Picture 1: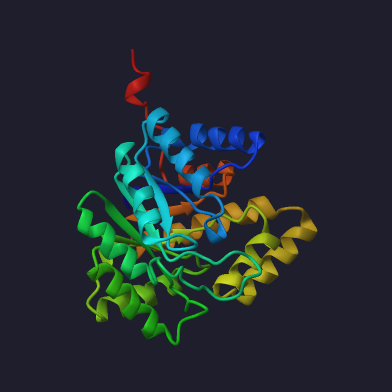
Picture 2: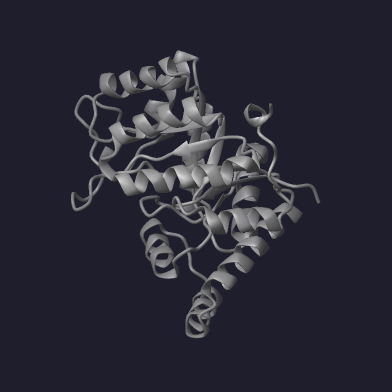
Length: 289
C-alpha cells in the first residue's frame, strides 16, 4: 500500500497568539509535503479579511500551494469576485468555493440581494475566469438542508459540471460511510478520483461531537462508547490517534489515494497520523544550501 497524497486545512488567526499557533502548525506540517493547504472563512464571512491576509502570507512565505476558501455569504457578486481577483493577483490560483454558513443566530442562509444565490453560481463565475483550480464540499452523510442523500449527490454533480475540479468531503467516522457515498457518486456519473475524503483527527471529543451534530455527520455508538471509556482512563489522545490512523488505513485499502486533514490549527495529532501512514518529512528545497 503506497503512502497517500495529503492536504491540510487551517483557519485564519484572530489574535496574536493564534497567529503564532498558525505559524507553528504550518512549520510542523509543511515538511510532510502536502499537495496543497487551505484556509477557511468563518461563519457569515466573518474572517474574510483575515483569510485573505493569511492566504497571501502563507503563499509568499511558506512555499506551499495555498487554496483560499471563498463563500457567497454577506457579499455582492462584485465584492466576491473582487476578492477572487485579489487572490489571483497575489499568485493564489486555487479556491475552495462554498455557499458558506450564515452568521450565528441568524437562521437559514439568505443570499445577498446582489450576491451569489448558490455555490453553483459562484463556481460558474470562477470557472469563467479560467484562472483557478476549484474545489468544493461534499457530504458522505446527508447535509442537514438536503431533501435526501440522492439530492446531495445530484447537487455535487452539478457543482462539478459547473467547473469544479475536486470535491473535499465533510468528515465521517467509518470508512464504509465514504465507500457507500463513493459508490453512489459513481452510479450518478461522478468520477471517484475527483472525491477526496476529509479527515478530522479528534483533538477534543466534546467539540468534535457537537460539530458532527451540527453538520449532520452520523456518530456511531461504538465511537461514543470508546471516547467515554478513554476519558475515564485518560487515554483520549491515544484513542484518537489509533482511530484516525485505522480510518485512513481502511480508506487506503479501499483504493483512496488522497486524504484531506482538518487540522483545527492543532498539528500534532495530524502529524502523528501521517507518520503512522508512512508519510515522512521531506527536505524542502528552499532549505537546501
